[in-house]
Image (tube, rainbow, N blue to C red):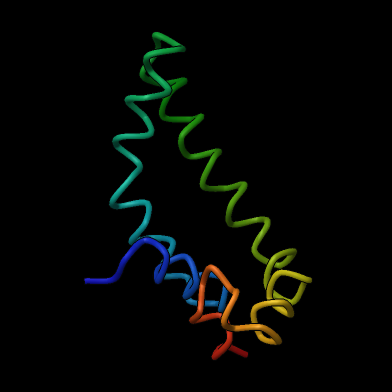
Length: 87
């Protein structure tokens, strides 16, 4: 079983299945959290999905950006050591 950190690192390295696994773990909980503020299940589901959409859209900024370069150059300080081995 992969940790959340490992899944996120794999996602940043281009593995789309990793974000699906994170969504499987957290989408329902995030939806319920959003529901406590919105009081609408439909809006809560939309907001939770939007959160994952933002993460997915930002991947190109993180991977190939300074975050990935930092982890590749300094794997000892990288919060996601698997990044050093991707690309």
